[in-house]
Length: 115
Image 1 (spheres, rainbow, N blue to C red):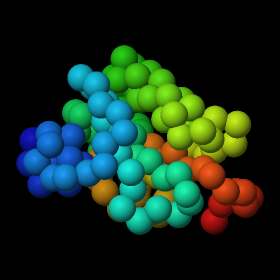
Image 2: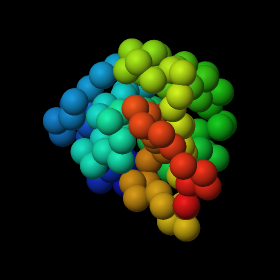
Image 3: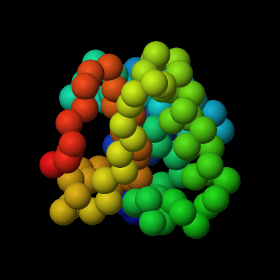
Image 4: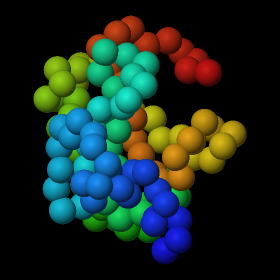
């Protein structure tokens, strides 16, 4: 797949680009965001390339594991009592990398609406 060959998140998942990894399994990788918006800001991605959450939804096993890792990260990072999980889908929603990823954001008071 051409998109996956040039995808920075695919390269991170493959270990070709350095990242501060906080979790990894056969299907999912979690790593610290380079531009955090909160004291805790971890990205959780599937190793396989899916452009967005709509595409990921077709792979129920990977989607479920990704959500399990979101919960694990929240526990490990001590924010399980108050954190935000965000999937941006498409440019209008602010998706900057065309590889589905969940933001786990916490460690500070969140505002609503988010933007």
